[in-house]
Length: 370
Ligand code: F6P
Image (cartoon, rainbow, N blue to C red; front, side, top):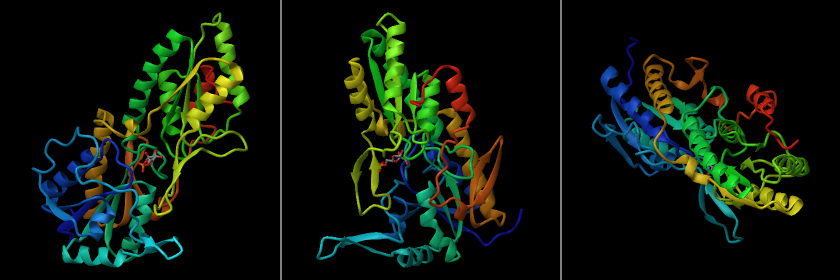
């Protein structure tokens, strides 16, 4: 084992929460203490806690029993980017921003933190860059329900989220069949369609609309009308729609815009739009369900608990074996690897149109609205 001057590490969770974060925190803390005799400090609410110096020691007792608990015991934040912190509106009502990296660096020094373990998505990785540039030892763990992080085959949180979505879609099947309706279900995923694609296939949904394949509402209507007709009028259809889906030549539906946020646009509403158009164009009774943050909640499924534990433990090994200048643990096939955080920041991994799961879905006569 390479000796290393690291003795005190900080852990923070940034971006949207997801099932499995606590399993990572547990693995990081226990591995650091048991294998390397380190002192571990939890930073509350992502980089905002670092800025506000809300930092306290984590012991094995603090992380005992949290493997199965959803969310993050540290709290998280997807509105605080230390390089661009909202600092109120100017006299013209225009939002102003300030750079708070300096204060964060001072707090790292005052708490004598030798390194940071950063658990987050592409936005959180972007927030880490000025600290890496300042020479702070950093390792990262890829986290998001969207599964859209570059460099890794999968992120923890994704399997739990699409399992939750699938169970909801299964329930929609029985009510759709009873009323011979079209049920439209909108799921999260930001600009990527991984959640809609996997939960759509797993639930046997009839139509899957994802951002990567802009749809033609006429095709969607023809498909659901044919399903109804082919079953003597008793046919039903389940349409799963990614929140970032959009019609060909059109744009996604925006739920709200927050100019003070690092990610000002919040998507949402495409499900209702698709349902209204189906009902207007076909006359078929149609209803909408928006799963929203339901898929962000709950206890991680065993597969995510295992992946999170692997990620957390490997992050400490990277740090303590000299790969500490900004590496992110990744899943590659059946193995773990690591990539440069700079190659991950502010990028998203979208569903490639030639992905095998799209071909398989088409093989079982799923429509992608084209
Ligand atoms: O990135 C995770 C995610 O859940 C996206 O799927 C979704 O668009 C976004 O976060 C929602 O953000 P918020 O929790 O701020 O509403």
